[in-house]
Length: 220
Ligand SMILES: [Zn+2]
Ligand SMILES: [Zn+2]
Image 1: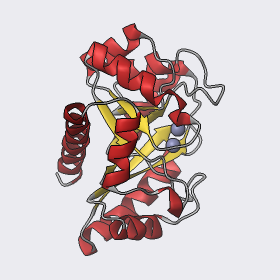
Image 2: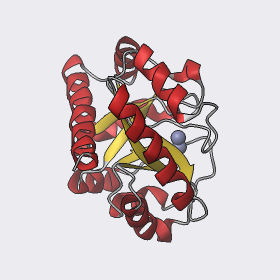
Image 3: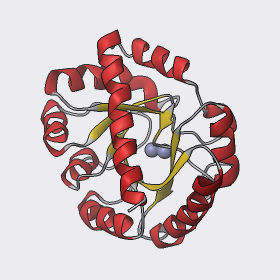
Image 4: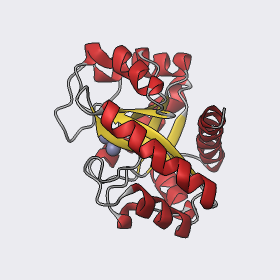
């Protein structure tokens, strides 16, 4: 299992990074990104601390823990600047909290995140075809999510990604230990989103490639 979107108690998750990663090891994960909610107030607080924990855990345990961030409910106009800032502070994965059906995310967030070239546009809700095509062009991954509520549009996201060539990944958006899933359940969620076996293999490969790229960047 590769999961590039999870939360620790540096935002609204319940576990310190070490316990989150320990539980991921026990679940059979090979890679986990810790992507706590952030805006202009806490990027510089969160990223270096999570990165320090990841560095320690990577030296000792058989898993790759990637420090990341989820830019959440920020004004769309600030995406480019905060994405760049997050990367310069050491975020190896930048997730954008997209226009989910279940929260009043500012309209224009999906587009701004894609234009800022975040790594993953999480739970993009009813993303437009044009935006999905732009995501494909910019190499921004659209997310299929295991998270309740956000997952309401999984089937739509899978369909529009197929039509536009946008790359998909699957993440859990874990906040609590029970949110972590295994490979088998991930495949069931992808089947449930209407994807074929062949498309599912491609999704899992997208996660692998993105994780490998982030990991290489971290070890540079
Ligand atoms: Zn989110
Ligand atoms: Zn999240």
